Length: 149
Image (cartoon, rainbow, N blue to C red; front, top):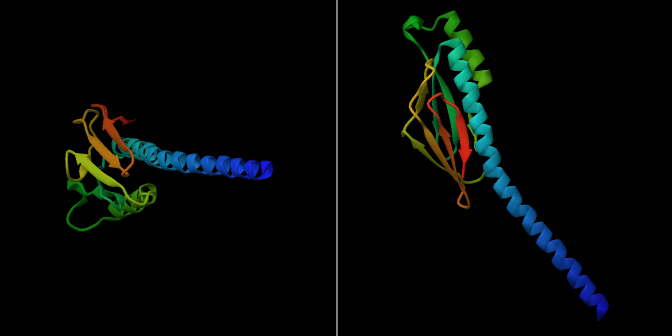
């Protein structure tokens, strides 16, 4: 009888430990995703300021993508400089899928965000919702993003 109780106690402890690990992994998943995105957007802002190029960033339920925007000096046909910049940009900022199964995304302002070579910009907000937790990435006027619950 005591042996059965000990076995049941061990099974209960192992089960509860496994469940708490699953809950922590889920929370770390969206937190990790939000932190990585904040870092990528900071890298993007640095790239834009250094290169002088404008970049569009968009996100949806599948993931997010970056698009280099041609400027007036690029002309109607692609120049070798533009193609080189575009190839380098594609390596630095590839399209990325969310690491979570289901993510709802809401952007303010809606639509693609355009990052330009200006030190001050309008505040932006991104909402990530995995169905269990909602996180917000908010930018300040200098373009720095913070993750908030």
